[in-house]
Image (cartoon, rainbow, N blue to C red):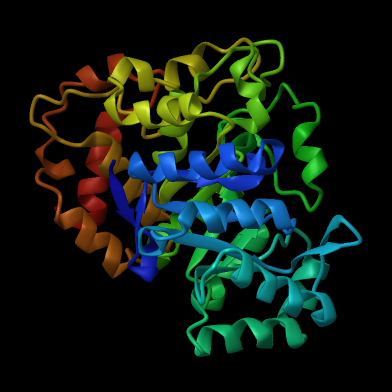
Length: 380
């Protein structure tokens, strides 16, 4: 397993994570065994947004005796009322639901205390200006939650979260289809018909990823498979099918992303996700799917896919392009981005202008020109 540092939390999270929402669909014994099996494969981050007792009990029993291995992403504001999931900021429900989470997970702390599911401005204002946020801070001050996070599907809300300074990580929905969709306060809109005129990453989403990278706010990914719709050309908005490995690679190549949380029904599905770590470049190649899709394509945008390799002077072109994209969003190059750029073994100034990379780029990016601009921007 490969691990990444989850932003300013400093936590080392597995690139392949565990989204726990499917656990309750199976007998408890099977699901407990699945959690333990995931740990054996090196998966160490698990999300528990679910308020139902069965899901929480399963995770608690799956972690029993191995709590120190797991980084738990537990949600504050996800409650169980009259046998139903209810998202709320009402403290008479929030507090007992969180205390129930601790009890059923058999733990006295949550690694990532996640402000649960804010997609609208109204909900953001409620959460940030009532006793709800005071409670979150109290939990943090007492060490009951080690770090404060937030889950959202809306890049505008995610950006607000990053700019607070106290929210250290974001759980965000990322896949090739969602990245082409403008911000919305209604998640259902993201599952509707896609305008065939859309092309490339939505600017607000690209800005969010760059801001997270700059501010060192780590991203964990939900809905990386678009509920399985991307696996079938008939349901994929691209009119072409992706594989799980391609979707995983897409998510993990976004700036700021540290882990993708996959849902599992079986050990075989865990194995399939973890197989990403052994996959070759051809198996990971999402760019060719997007570029040849009958309904959508990116044009002129670097997606950091790595098709430009190999470079005769060993420039990591995708990484250089990431740092360039991060830098040009700001009036001046951020010190952190400058430092990361200078730490590269080979920088853009080494480009010899052979343009062999451009012949391999699926999206027609003028790489040589970008290398010139990058060298000028960073001063080397």
